[in-house]
Length: 153
View 1: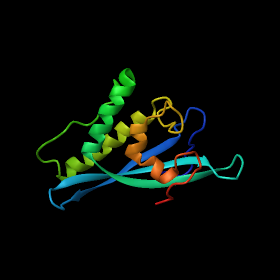
View 2: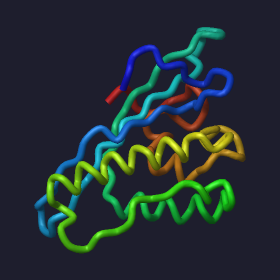
View 3: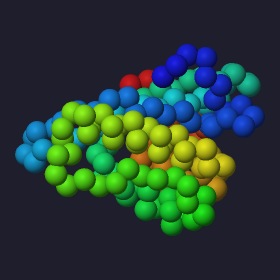
């Protein structure tokens, strides 16, 4: 993720995400996982108006993106009309060129999702709990802004 990104400012998302890399997991059945990195700023406890940056990464399979997409389409309807999830591919989906192309397409997908107004306002009723779960937001940031949760892992 790039340095100097304004997060949570006027017109900016409160969460920045990057699908950084992919790996092929061969434990049992073979499948691809994508590293989804996240960065957000939350109020620093006891620091008044100061904020702290939280960074973390989660590994998600394509099927998790499919489940997220279905949930977001159900909740956000027309706001998802122009956002396209890369299509499923049954054969050849572990070939390096395909994996890299899909990684880029998933990155574009997530960036479009994050532009939906208020979707990352996880502390408020209009944020998407499905998106928060996808990012494991509450595990890393806490249930209340600036509250408990994991760290910079």
